[in-house]
Length: 138
Image (cartoon, helix red, strand yellow):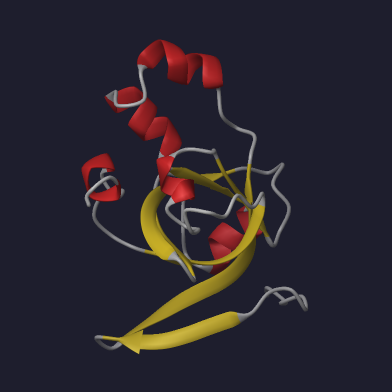
């Protein structure tokens, strides 16, 4: 059983007769990113896209929302939402999530904001991660 701390909240909605579990997490925009590799690959390469369109979740949080390694999740903030692939890691603590400082994470806050931690809601999704073309569309 997953008990929610005071910093977490659970949202349950019914969509097409399907229960959707959503979990609020503190998203930290740092770490797990190799800037040298990004520079070497180029920020528009397929390999860079695969590495940057990720969120790192704890095993407990991933299990709670029904997500396994490599599944697509939707990350919502007050400023936007993106679909990324989940990476499940034992070293990530419950209630926290990490994303590299790349276009997908930057789409979650306003243009004049540069937070290192924001509150987001994460839920299992389908399809593919949000494309760079979509993120950069006017």
